[in-house]
Image 1 (cartoon, each protein chain N blue to C red):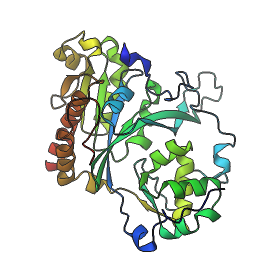
Image 2: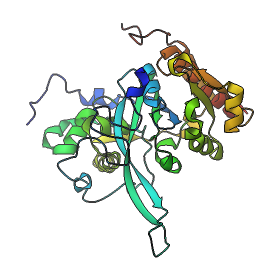
Image 3: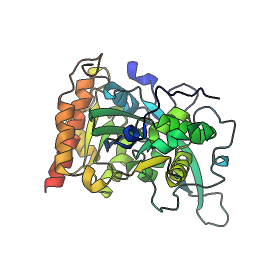
Image 4: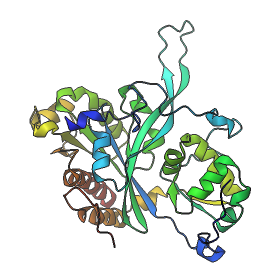
Length: 200
Length: 148
C-alpha cells in the first residue's frame, strides 16, 4: 500500500531521543461567531485545525414522561491552533464549541488549561455569560476580550464589566481578532493572570 | 465584514451549518467500529487531554508496514510528536477513537504517550517562558517567525 521509505526511517537510536515538547494549553471561549477561530488563526503557526469532540449532554426532556434526564452524546466541532515557543515548549489554543448550551460540557477540552480568553461581541453580550461563569466557577485564570468589529465597540469597558459582573481582578480589554499583535497581547494578559496565580 | 465568514464551531471546509449536527464529512465506517466499540478512557483510567503528545517508537516504525488502516496512519503521523487533537484533525478521526487507538498502540510498544503534568505546565517558570516566547511574536501579518 505504501512504499517503504528506508531513507526517512530513523534508526532505533534516533527514534529513542525524539522528545515531544511540553504542551501548554489555553482556551478561547465565547459565543457563536464571535471571532474565536479568527483569533486562533491570526496567531497560530498552522491553519486552524478542526476536530470532533464528543460531549455528553443531559437533556432536560420536556417531552420526557419519565421525568428522568436523558444523557445523550453529541459531537461538536472544535477549532485549534498552536505556537511553537521553542523545541521543548508548545502553546496550544483551543476554541470551545460556540453553542451556549454546550457551555457546561467543556471539561474534556479545558482540563489542564493554564487560562482562558473569553471573546465578547458587545452587540450580543449575553452570548458570553456561559463562558464567564464556567471559568469563574472552575477558578481558571481568564480575561475578557471585547472584539472590536470594524474597529468599533458599542459599549465602554466599564459598561461591559458592569454587565458581565466579573470580579475586579479579571481584566477586560479591547482587541481585534484579526490582528496578530492584538491577539498576542490579549493572550499575554491571560498568561500574566495565570502567572500571578501560580506565584500567589 | 471579514470576520463574519467564520462562525466558530463550523468546519473549516465549509461542509457544515451551525447547529448540533455532526461536523465534517461523514466517515464511510462508523467511528467506533475501529475501536471494537470501546470509548475512551482506556484501561489506564485517565482520559488523555487533547494536547497529550504522542510519538512513534522505533519499534512502531519498524512494523509500520504490518499495521492496518488507522493504526498505520497514526504511527506514521507520529514520526514527529503530535497532539492527539492534531492526529484526530489530520486523519479525520473522532478524538475518542484516537484516544483508544493511541492507548492500544502504546500498550503494544509502538507509540509513546506523554500526558502533560498540569503541575509542570502551570509552573511559574514554564509560564514565564511562554510569555517571553509570545512577546517575541511580531505585530505584522505574513511570516510568523523568521525561518532559518
